[in-house]
Length: 339
Image 1 (cartoon, one colour):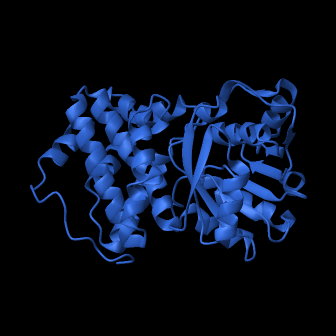
Image 2 (tube, rainbow, N blue to C red):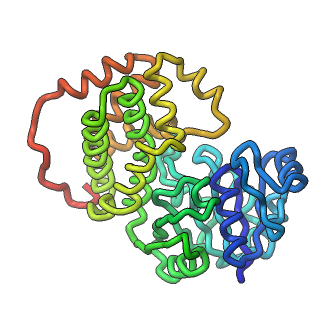
Image 3 (spheres, rainbow, N blue to C red):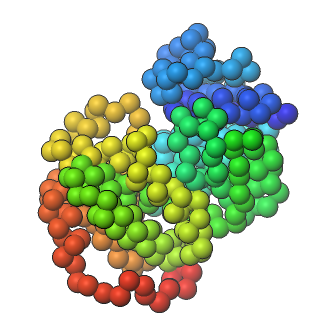
């Protein structure tokens, strides 16, 4: 039994707290909003972010990050990408040395273009290994104990093995990886492609169009990941293809929902204002394009989705632009990693 703290009481953080308690750990769940923390503690449920799921008695709810991380052996960071740095910076002075940090957020920091594990490592300091948790994993399905397979990725092999051992359950299987770059680029970029897939669905363009978008989206994600130093085979696995498929097709996907609503003619601001949870692809799109420019990688789907999200074009014109691009060979020689 480990003492595990989950920072972030959204849908994913709550689901992980429930899961980790079920497998026998002592869990603290920290909510940034004191009112949410009080409500969670009183109701033993999170009706806003994870309805119909009861918090087990073993989950302690905390409103102060310092109290939440004190004495923890593992800290899970389930915080939206734009809030990650601030939360880790505030909690770092209270974190035990040598603690394993699990980054469960998918996105890029918009101003620095850093991946979430890089943000966590910068703020937490040396001596605290970071493990990335990623893969096709809707929070509600994990909370309902439906079969799920994910990746634990880190340059620190013992930390990866610890997360694999302590997070596993009969319904929750973890594979290990040392390709942190590939895993995180896949986890961030799939949200961008899911918005495009939602647009195609909302326009009623059929299964052929969605299959093409998902497949070419995978090629786009793979190009960027390999240019940044990731491995091609990683993107053919759970954190690439697996996460892409579930996010582009699953009814629980927030990013797919954004695309569908844009295709129906709604303004982005209206779509976002009606959502309780964050669709990371909205923020990630611009950051992905900047990263692509840094590495000289063409990202046609992300480019068109950025134009849609910024209001510079409409959804039909954006998809027409993708179809009318110059025809080419499907596969191209792979760039060496890091180029």
